[in-house]
Length: 406
Image 1 (cartoon, rainbow, N blue to C red):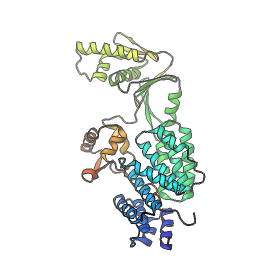
Image 2 (cartoon, rainbow, N blue to C red; image 1 turned 120 degrees about the horizontal axis):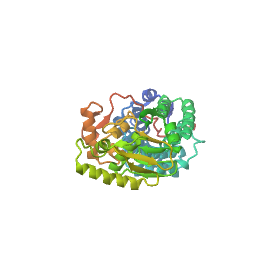
Image 3 (tube, rainbow, N blue to C red; image 1 turned 45 degrees about the vertical axis):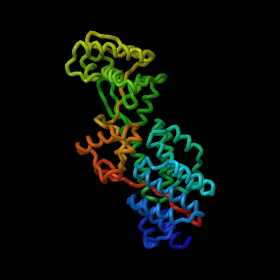
Image 4 (spheres, rainbow, N blue to C red; image 1 turned 30 degrees about the vertical axis):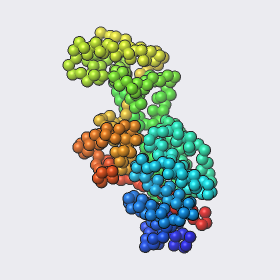
């Protein structure tokens, strides 16, 4: 590796893409193309970065398998940053295996973290946790240690282990400061903001208030009967009953939970469960049937008794009934929640993350765009969606080769 390539790599490692480009901007050899691609990615020009990395991968000879694998990993990170979740995961796995075989443990670990972050975005938490459990970050440089702790914190937050998440973010903050890379420090700060922001709304005895993730964790571990409108589950400390596939029953359970300790009027239940503005005998008959089904579904947690004006929820073990709701409830709130990360998403990536059809997601995006809540750029398969205007930070991108002194 010549001196200019080494100096450019060191500049990128320090988070100085312009300093790297000053040294290699006019060179078209394979190492320079790879470093130029990384620099353009750090500057936010992801399309140009991807093109340069692909040119670099082609320019490396057939005997330079490690260099080509590093380019694949760097391209995978660009795909992750641009929320191209359909990028072939098998290519990243093959590149990671190649790096492992040739002893490039740092870049192999980085590739594994990219796999884990993708799994987190699409909601495959158990698989993500299995992949990260076998990694020891101790021998890694500060930037990679920070990446490890960010992944650990992300998994912990989604599993409602807030003490673990906060400890991991504290370690990530120290590692990011040691690395001295502004984009990495900004990513850690963003994760802290998520942890310290309201995660849900608590509705109890006719009042509601926002609560933090720590409070959600404590609530789910308490003896209260929780009607969880985030996961469509009714639970107490020992039992959980999922109503995710029974929306009418969950709507009834939520209305009863919000009314507790009083009863919920029949008119309210009809409006919530069936959206009936003018109830007739058929609606009332159906309400009795659905309340009977709810009573059967919740028999281990609570009873549902008839009153003069409606129905009331009677918890069996719990002394309190509360409703846990999303921080914001409106049409297509789940789509907005993903776009709130400040990155640009394709409709196919949103469909994959939400577990919905692409056509359903596209209709939601069109509706949100008409209301001015999201905006798009690009055309066809290159079209991306984001919330306006949300500044974001690209992550620290992989160096295509380790420095000679490392």
